[in-house]
Length: 403
Image (cartoon, rainbow, N blue to C red; front, side, top):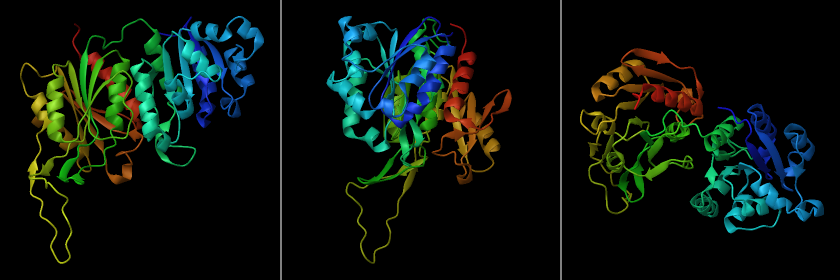
């Protein structure tokens, strides 16, 4: 469904990601939405008022002390005359001012005076995003009902890598659509369980066994399912990713904790086990840090098998989800191993991918998967992990029986 007749107030703050704003405005206009812009002083360093005015075909607002506007309480009209306020890019500074309830410029004043839903698309340096102050500010805003999309992970203008890139305009448009359209998504009323990330299996209080999973694919799947209307329970191992908007997140460390959290989340209509769970753990983790002593051999670690989360939850029984989807990350004989895994673990589908170092898939932004079902194998082209997630979510929606 398009956004015809919807009114969007777009607040553009001062970050390099503002270069994406013209594309966002074009996309919203193509959907039939009316767009008005508030441009901060910092935002004007990256995109001009004339550009925003030409694309939105509306006046651009920036000065809270405009006498004409304020004689009519212009900031109140702006704050309440829209169906949705979108802040893109949402800088660390503006998010901090929002959390503190400041009203020191037009953008902050509009956000403080509004009674309409707010969606923010954060964009900043990875260290700023991961700073405790920003995490606290985001928690405050989300507790107040502010919706969040992103940030994405990747290379930034400062040449650092990590979460901090503003979400792409198509993803922002989809988030806006989900907030403003009354038509329920195809997964409305469904509960889907998703696992994501690695597990950390302790050796001693400071060391652990793990793998290189970033959790990006699992988190993207959780977000895509939520965008289709599902109630999503995400059980995540240790990752540096932000929580997907509209998703209930349970954080765990070990495979045993992940299994317990998954069992507690049941019943579910479908389950997607995208986490890269460690196959083994140390039989007896040391209570103190293992010390290296000169002339002494390295400690011998006795390993035992971790619980098989996929096989456990896919086993026949009243708590088994109707659709169980597993993942198979392989470095050789991928399809043969994945087909055998589907049979052995009683999964309905297996999503297989080649994670050999040369592919760049493990921890990267793209994926190339093969969907293995009872009907055969579908080879999907290489694409962004977000797109893989959207395609898989649509397949899940189509596979569940009509209620």
